[in-house]
Length: 189
Image 1: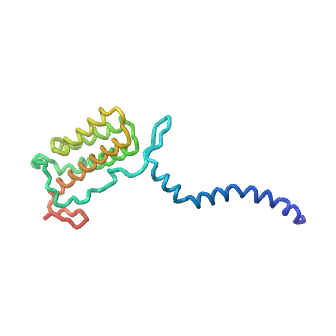
Image 2: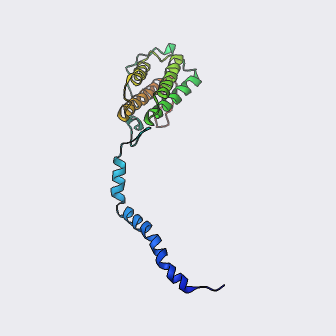
Image 3: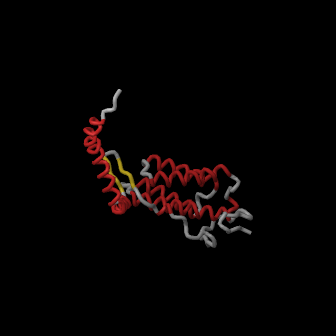
């Protein structure tokens, strides 16, 4: 078998031609990478015949700036709150996170209602259904149920309020635990 140098030289233009468009494309993308990044980050929502996808940050992604020293107006009578219902406390937190995620991921209304139903169930078992924050969550449930169009903005707002109620409930419960340490340098006495 003999190496045919002439065939190699003859096929070189075809090889270069086959690489030309990918190299040109990559060069253009590299030159315009900052502009492309800016355009992509401004896309808020993509709509398709079967649904939509929302992009970007949500208010629910923001942690409260400061949760120490909150003077909560909730006048919850803790004698009726069952902080010993550990599984319900766990599933309350889980269901709030799950429902917030479903809101932000454009989950279907029936899934959102299932999440709110579970949250309200656990609030009831724990004894916080009639608290200020339990009532707020019940109002959010009603808003999701009655809203005609669950837009990305509406969903983000509800998820933010749901998570804010979760932080407030956590603050209330932390106040009931002697020596609670939130890991951020704040401890109950």
